[in-house]
Image 1 (spheres, helix red, strand yellow):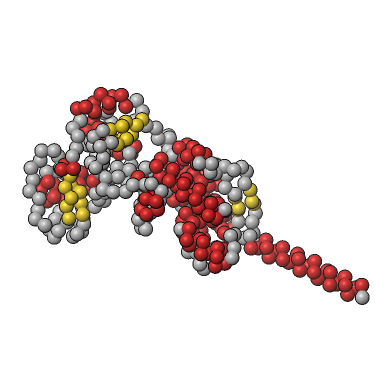
Image 2: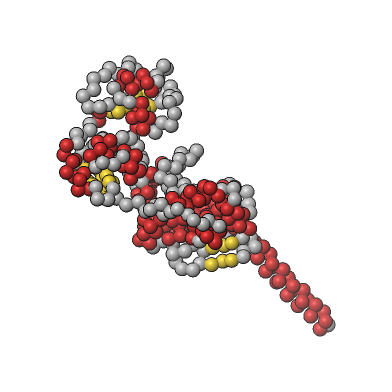
Length: 360
């Protein structure tokens, strides 16, 4: 009788041991779990994370090197923004896999900027987008918006893995997945078909990129040529101005001025705003303030909205409106000379130019 009870007890212990093994397997063979401080994201290293570490070290190596070198232009600012919002500063590395820290990044889904905001989400978090500007491209404004969005997502899910996954897939998708599979464990959730492959890979990809960015030499990225943090001074304008004129007045290139102001979509500050804050290189503010009075104010009449019709070419439009092909392309973010019928263009016109607009 005692032997029977012993065998039953032994079987129960073995059952509990087996249950523990299953639980461990559900955690995807975790090799390490660590959260050093409130400024860090919990780190799980498993075979999915290791796969992406290898991916970044091999097939994607040249891109990772470029992104790492570019990252230092924006990381100090991003860390400060996340600190001010009492969020883990590790979230600054999320931009590494979103855009490679490229303010002009543009996805097939029409997400824009370093933080790859869709227009509707960007608008919800205060980012304007119109003919003249797209604040999703502004590193500071978009980082502040991303911080607020991630804070809201964490309040919804109470898990940084789910919050970050929702940043990729949308909060609705992750909420439905939580409800459907009755789990708030990302790794468990990722086993099912409900999430797209992109979202399932998003967390391990983020962890892998973050680990490399925090200790690149450990992962074979040596002799990186980090770009200097972007520095500038701000000037409050009370009139719209041509950026070519601004660049000339402070003796820098138009391209350098545009790099400091990536939210500006064209060759000027917004013509629908009498007040605008423009960024200029350090030590150039005083010179610009002196020269500003001599720079003419632009008016809305200096631009024409044109709808492309059959037979239109950039050459013909430049002749009609007295402007140049490069200016038309810059104003409309055109990467080729090909126009589509029905396409809407904003044509820059120099003040005083007489033209006859084509009949509609």
